[in-house]
Image (cartoon, rainbow, N blue to C red; front, side, top):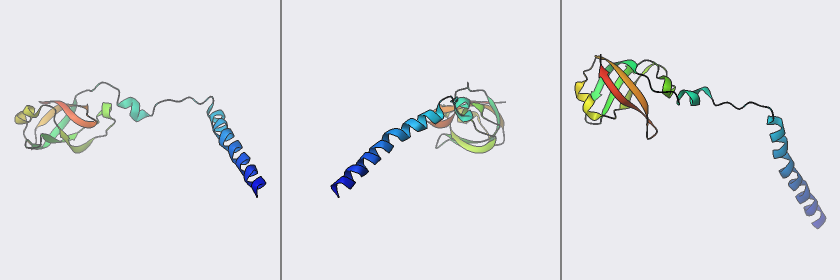
Length: 117
């Protein structure tokens, strides 16, 4: 029984050391590039045309029907966003056209600038 356990331990140890080496060899020569969404999040924020759907001054948010937000990798949609400058909400009216700039603030997609058109 003792010989069987020693033999089993040897086989396990052999596999434990050879499998990672084989995996590394299989990946040799592969070009590793960041995913498209990763590179999109590093581009500079550009203003996006949008329509104000709702202004929530109590919570510092605005709901916008917006075009694609390239720097965040987001397609066109309607979504609620926190606004960095809460005072800017006073200039907004539901149904008005705006140009908004978005970026991540503490990991959350946020309106960093918004101007009525």
